[in-house]
Image 1 (cartoon, rainbow, N blue to C red):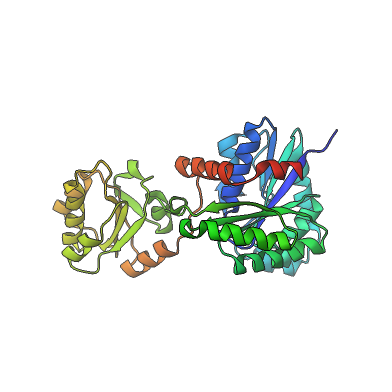
Image 2 (spheres, one colour):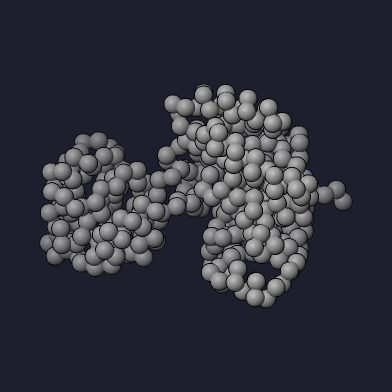
Length: 365
């Protein structure tokens, strides 16, 4: 039987757009009538699904598109804490790569095309002998590299990552530049295109920055804070684009509340809680300004304020963390697209379709 075509989507680092690229490419190929397979050989962020560790992105693709493959082969290696040390102690050289190739053989069965998603930059996984470059070579795949916006730094990072793939004979199909600010789009497109052409590298597309893809929702905030919903859980998908910490007077806080604001405040600052909820109710716009509240410091408001909160229809989370730690955790949160993020999924597919030359990728795989 003819083996299916494949492509390895890699990146110059974490959080530069591999997942959104894979969502867009997979969707495009499914709509073209191809029988698709997906595998993320090494996953550093995983979920426990029926007591099995599986990568978040493999789970995402599996739940959206329901491919004719069990979930586990789509995520053969999950890397929990201590994994690297145990591997070095055990010196199990070659075993992980065999596990990946065995899983790939299951995934590719009956497919026309297999999409392979890498992890981090080209060298990630080297410490346990399964770098992105090694895996791409073992699976006889060419590679598409994704980088974030810029000119000099972006091209430098691309060449650095390309060199590792080159050393193992993995061919680079082209490059996608992601997260380019609107005001710099034309300039970056022009100079990156010329700069890469001088190096014999194809620019596949430049995707504009979309803040909506990075905005967390209330469910993700609750998870990172180990919190619980006091009320409004039915609105857990409310998106957050602005954060206000209740460490000032009420008038100053109200000045900072904008569209889709998350208010973080200690539970004993009932003045801030009531003011925020009242401000939300005072707006005549059909779009609420307050996406939600986080009540911190293991202090719950009194009975009267709690009753107002429960009648507000605003999602409110209680956490035992201090206000400072809460704000730090929210600030540092790396937002990943979830199965329930239908708007982000649709936007990722739209951006790829509009800005990336998918036909060139198919012609050169």
